[in-house]
Length: 378
Image 1 (cartoon, rainbow, N blue to C red):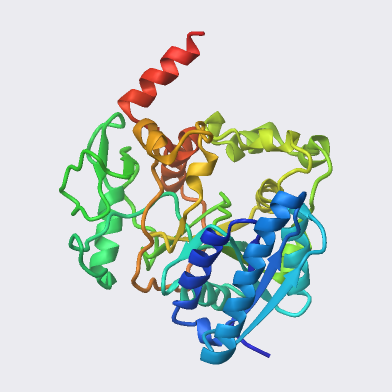
Image 2 (image 1 turned 30 degrees about the vertical axis):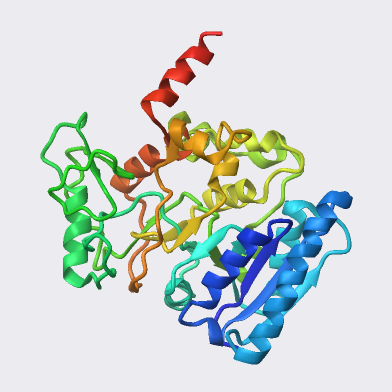
């Protein structure tokens, strides 16, 4: 049996995004040794079936390419005969993969991965296999250390300098009200006006995060390019049928923690039907007192964010005049080391997570803030 974790890719009707996701995955350093399962959902009507058929034609073309070039160890395409909808497709697909494998890496059709994404995920699976407190591994991070890479250049290996940058970015001697912004190519002392990363300082941010600053732990669950172990998923995941079922027995304190004091109102998703899989998994991790492992530089990029904005019916160029996502960053192209480390809940990390999650990570331009005030007044 292949010792590397398989990848489960879930697709529907976006051929362009699916191709970009596949091309990036095939460019991963461990792709030739990796099994890929693709779960293609069926259409809801003739229009969506047309788009689904385009996606499936692409999948079979890639399947032929893989067979010739051996860019994957194996590819299995599962074509749903009807519309399963996202939740059923993902949940049943994960369960199917975990019937035959100890771990699974989950991608959707808008997740572009960096070349060493699979290495990071497999290293984390191997090192934390027996530590049941670590329930989830993410290739994406909402809080990110500033990069020491030169503009337009290749990402360099961090080593000790990486540890220094990350810990220095969390250390402050300023008042809690100060915000400093760092761009993706800024040094620690740079002040960058149009940065994509905000660090909210507090006097407590003065301790290191263990032997490696290349990753960190949080009870927060991110679902963009992630993975888990069979025993964690089978032992804890439950697709809730109602809000009452999901919240039964959860304390008010834990509910507050899940929503980070109300700045990230994710529990409203429990009112949807069906309830999204990701809020169910997030609650399962919180209930179990589990942790998620994150890289300090994102290894994936979500290329479908514009479709999830408050102005989703507007053209992309219009939305860019109004807002941007703080964590819409190019993925880091270097390797990120994972070592054995005690998983702990760090209040400084959680403070930064709260800041990053505020307004779902949407940061408004002055024009966007003006529009919000105008429409809020009506």
